[in-house]
Structure formats: structure tokens, C-alpha cells
Length: 376
Image (cartoon, rainbow, N blue to C red):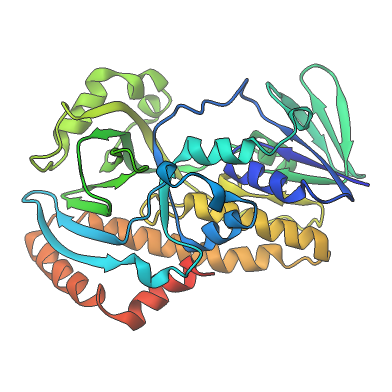
């Protein structure tokens, strides 16, 4: 029986573990640095059809409909005057069984976690060393060691295990933006709305069928190294209030109807780390972190974990080749979206809006830009 160590119990790690549950030839253990899960966190994620199809194969379709939402459109709106520019029909990428879905991240984590036997996950894990010279030997902070045949590294953007494997510190770069995330109170419809402002944009979408909405803003912000390392700054009410006041807000958005606000610097991957080993895989944000302007982070974490699963069973070494192509495409589109959403020059905004109106109805463009990724 082959033993698999999964480092990190986020979306990617838990989904991969779910795939292994019915495989008698594999035994796995999840090592999570946190002491438990918080299933009450309210912020949201978007899942396109590519990941919903994979989740439905492990029972996600049986989740109560009240816990998710199925937006049919993405609305593009001018933030300074609330005028709608155009919309994209998301239903064209759906099929009879799988639909574009929005929900709380904690809802997905709870679904994935409930299928994991308690003895399979070890919380408060502190990995100090990984020796992969002959098999895989993992050392922990309590001076214990365990040996495995495969290692799945999915412990996030600041992955400690990734650095241990490469024998060097690998850090993402700050992309000069701060994210502001929270819940929105009120009725904002059943679709996704992107409000484009000057050097910022924010997105609103439903989390479920209970009138709970996700709010996330991406705001251009230059910060010194000292400020980036000051974690208290991003928790500061004064700093968060300055971010809210700096947004080009519609009359619907104010500090009165925003709650549970949190801010954090946006970091992205600067390069694609590749391993020439058939028994060690990077997944989720540990593999690559995209700019948050294409809403593919969670979906790609799931899709990547699925590719790892297939690679282990097939014994092939094509995983990274396939992922490089997909990640490069999504990364480029995320950067383009970010640039487009943050225009400030009135002439450029006028041209952008004209182009958006045309492309939002162009079937050939939409299939190439979105369909190939959503249905991959």
C-alpha cells in the first residue's frame, strides 16, 4: 500500500483526500498547521463549471440548494455613476448537471471535511524538514518522523514545505494592491456585479439563497516593506476605513451595510516552480497564485488536485506540462482583467466600455476567453 502525505488542509488538499477515500491501494494523512477549521467564516468564492463537475462527482450536488447560489450573469458597472455597461451570460457555459456557482468558502470546506475520517487529519502540524533523497521522510517539531511514498504540497501561497523542498525561501511578490473583503447587507440580486472604478474595482455576488452577499474590493496601493510586514496595519480600523472611503462607491455601498471587513495585501506568484520528481507535487496556491481578477483560484485548486490524482494513477510525468499551459493562460487573462477594471483616463474608459459592449455578446470571443477555461 502506498502512503501519501498531504501538506495543507485547504480546498486543494481536502479535495485530493476525498478522491483517495475509495482507493484501497493508497493510504493518506493530512497535516494542517491550524488547530481547527472555522466553518463560520462568511467570505465567498466562485466556482466555474470545470470545478463544479469534479465536485459533483464526489457528492457536491447533494448539498442543499439554499447553501449555494447560481448566478446567470456577470454585470459590468461604472462605479462612479452606477451605470451598467453590459453583461455576460454565464448560462452559456453551463450544462444540464453543472452550473456556475457562488457560495461561502467555509461551506465548501465543511463539505470536503465531513468526508475525511478523523484519524486522517493531524492539526497543529509543524514540519521542520523534508528529506526526499530516498523516498520521503518528514520531520516534525515534536521530533517525530514519518515516511511516505508521495508528497502533495498544498499549504498555501507562503508554503513552508515548498521552501524546504527547494532548499531556498520562495516568496510571492506584492502586486501593489490591497484586497478588502467582507459581507454586504441588503438585496443585490442574484447575479455577479463588477464595479469598475479609478485604480480599483469591487465585486458583489450572492453567497446562498438567504440574502447574504460577498463583497471584495481590489485597490491599488503602494506600501513599503515595513508596512507590508506590519500585520496589525491590515487589522486597523483606521486603515480599513481609509480603504472604504477611497473607493468610488455607488449609493448602495457604505460603511453602514458592510460588515466583517478584513484587509490584506495581494501577493501573486512571479514564476512557475517545477519539480522533476514523480512522487512530489505542488497544488493550489503553493503551485501558483493568480491575481484575483478572474475568479479562478478555487476552481484551479480543485482542477490541479484532480490532475495530480490522475498523474499518480497513470504514472505519467505530464502533470506540470499541462498545468503550465493552463496557468499561463489564466494568469495572463487575470492581469488583463485587472488592467481593464482599473482604468482612470476618461478616454480609455470610453473605449473600454465600447469594446466590452461588443465582446460581451461575441460568442466566438467568449468561448475562447472563458469557455475553454470554464469547461476544461
